[in-house]
Length: 159
Image (cartoon, rainbow, N blue to C red; front, top):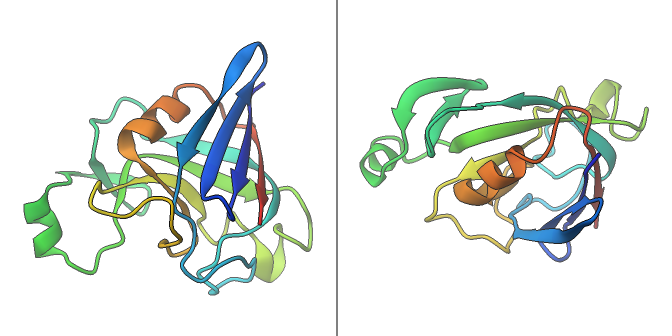
């Protein structure tokens, strides 16, 4: 099974698979830094796994709200109409924590915090913390990753 390593310090996601060279993707994690508490808008640390994959077969830049496609595709015109929207595009990998009391359960539950790996507009910066807690990727990178992982794929998020 593949494994994902996320380095917050390097703003990098690494996909490791048996007998295949590692793949590296530039990402954007939380503007508020690291943290596990609900309402912190921070990126959680520790051992996680993909709980649910959402968006298979959707067009590139499909807009999601509440984990459902809206029927819209992201464009600069749409962005201008909704300037405060936190754009979730193309695919969603919904994460769940594996460490009770650290990133699972109570006020530190990654799944209930709705922490995803998701696509973001090309106009958003990569390689710098900018998100509201999720891990953002370019849509074409996310789609490539999405096709190579399954629900259950382990993820380690480290500072």
